[in-house]
Image 1 (cartoon, rainbow over the protein chains, first blue to last red):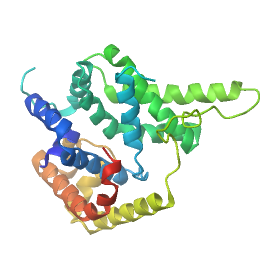
Image 2 (cartoon, each protein chain N blue to C red):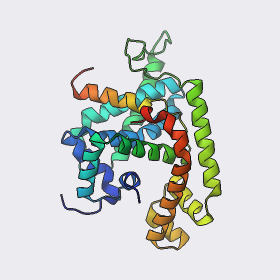
Image 3 (tube, chains in turn red, orange):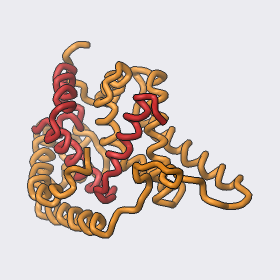
Image 4 (cartoon, chains in turn blue, purple):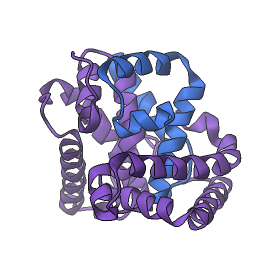
Length: 70
Length: 200
């Protein structure tokens, strides 16, 4: 089973999760695979919103909050 | 932490990492839940723009309240409670506003993050094409794979429950679902490529 699916299914061990999170910090291809898999899952479940960068905008706000900015 | 399969505890494990400052763990949770949170809020406020704004606020609230989340808690239940409360709070404040003007959204206030802006016609068209392809691929799956996949994605059953319904071993069910997802993903990939830089 591919890594992105295993992450989303919780099919990892704690050690594997640690390694996966470390890779996600640096590996844009892996990040995209996780996001794409989730997009397909959501689509199957009827959540069919366009891929218009909304996730990135949420993450940008979280990063700003982490830095203590508004 | 012992090296055991995280199974249903993946969310709690991700929150625990986020509580220790690993933002990427929180990002995984955002990717996993943001559309469901937005849908929950949209059902209550019935306005896309407000739903998107409130979804951002919900994840900010999660970030701020991370420390209060208990390790044995149910993250999804916590998250959707925050989401419903945010929607109800918005509706209450909307009712209380005498002049009936909409609340000022962040993008109107000079925020440059394009909050709550409706998708472009191009984005709408690409999404339509993608989901039509997904529907076609689901229809083309072998029966065993399709049944297992739909029980998982539409009915939200876990692998054990699906195995019980289909009277098959859990590993067989996992294999069916994995193959189904791979088949769909491989055919949907060309349609996913153009929006790659907009996902994560």
